[in-house]
Length: 268
Ligand SMILES: Cc1cc2nc3c(=O)[nH]c(=O)nc-3n(C[C@H](O)[C@H](O)[C@H](O)COP(=O)(O)OP(=O)(O)OC[C@H]3O[C@@H](n4cnc5c(N)ncnc54)[C@H](O)[C@@H]3O)c2cc1C
Image 1 (cartoon, rainbow, N blue to C red):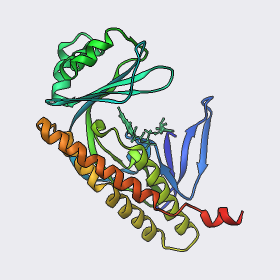
Image 2 (cartoon, rainbow, N blue to C red; image 1 turned 90 degrees about the horizontal axis):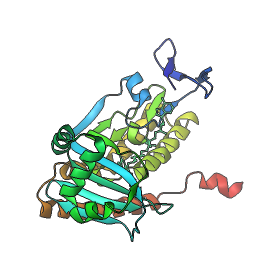
Image 3 (cartoon, rainbow, N blue to C red; image 1 turned 90 degrees about the vertical axis):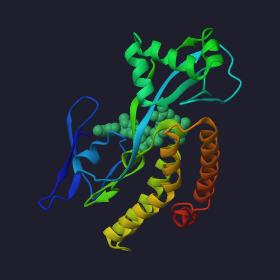
């Protein structure tokens, strides 16, 4: 998608883009849903307002490694850093390190490359892990982001709506966001169903979506902003425990929601 189509009253009525071969494509739509992540072109094209912003502070770097056994998820907490191991398929693990952007930026300016900077950050944050990686082989480039925003965007407007990272973004120190994207998709689908089916006036239905979204993410957004400020280690660990409880609470609330379209499935 490269742009939005609008009618004479500036309502979004479709998208412009191109197919895989590069041929131009135009699609009409009663609603355009931006599920296009943090750099969301939909959000930028409509000028979606940022309604809430937390201090932007954190950097996250990661890469995949293979060649040594990974026994499970690992976390390493140190002053002003948080690192870990997420084992994944084919004997690989994602190795990541989070730190204040100022610290990661200073290391990157000193180091000769991203790989060296990553190694130095890991050495500082998790020396035993850095030592083990000496026996492992890196299977991906080092990737990441230096200054991650904490922001909440307006979720809808005339003919458009946003879900997931397009609608709001949190520092990756919590490594959490996929459930939120699914939750938003479900809440928005229910709201659009009401609006398109004439059960509710569209602004009322979409405002309810935004209200539900904002309430659901409030606690974890707040905790993320505090974690991304890297308080002293005991406080950081206490916040992680609060995060864990908040995630459990959110999972229970999501599981308790009615199955979308269950009524239709039952009669199919
Ligand atoms: C380092 C890191 C680690 C993380 N770890 C976890 C974790 O362990 N667990 C967890 O729950 N969350 C984690 N997250 C957060 C999680 O990745 C995101 O919250 C989640 O992926 C958001 O999903 P989304 O669908 O909204 O956006 P995205 O996953 O960003 O998907 C957006 C999609 O839109 C496509 N797109 C963009 N622009 C266009 C366009 N113009 N036209 C067509 N398509 C377009 C993109 O190619 C992409 O496929 C992590 C994030 C980071 C940065």
